[in-house]
Image (tube, rainbow, N blue to C red):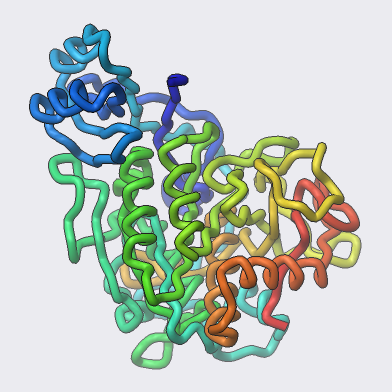
Length: 416
């Protein structure tokens, strides 16, 4: 079996006023006290290894993962009957973006209850509140979420896949980073129980908060793959959207298999394109997978009569432009992603930028459309997103052009 290199995952956002996250250069952690490994081989040999080293995640015939110390790792490498893959935890090398203005604080509330991204996706500059999403579940795989006043009523599930000593902690998903809380707010913030909070695209949707990344914003591909599969297994008799504002420059087969598994069970998967633009073929994974809707980032600037694709937003494959057919490493749609205000993990609000912020706009729109059309399958929903995107062609920004392009994909899907 061909050996597969599986990479860790990082947030695809540029956080303003705190640490800056982007999918630029990666650096491997220098700590070798423990190793996360993916073990493959004959069933009998795998069974022996499971007994000796334990199991973090069992992926059936594909293999299993576990965490071992240095001595155990060396012993595994000497076993000629097993294939051992080291799953490195990847750390971020900052690639700063121009700072956005801060959002509101805990005491003051948001600076705008319906920020520019909400106005843009609703195509309504005077909108004061949003609606929709009832009956739809949105699984946000990220750094977790806090019990924010604008989110608490929507939280239906809370799980932590990021702990080192145990693989899964139920009813725990605390966000010590802020990124996951921000993403969740853009999807389904409900304006707050006191009527002074912020609104997301689909405030009646329910949130499945799956913490797959540590508070540093990094994680392992096996934890993410396991979370995707968990969502899929719990999706029976429900309409579920997975929203992933995370990514790696290299494809993980574990995550690809999990995305295909979820898609096969009727789950719509939406993922960030990445922040490595404006060069071509810079899209990351899992956004670059065929069964994921890759989302590029727009900024609130008009160019050539349309919104402009942000320079940091990753671009797709020039060989497939104009065909309106999604292939691997294609940008599919675009949405607001620069200077986006949303909920934060201090109970207040923050304004940050990245394809991480564009992705939840599309996830929220998908929830709103699906709630309004409950007989649709996930593939029909995806087609509707594409058709709506074609109605708002994006011609601003490097690589943007008339029709299907490497920068904005099919265009900008909106409510109306």
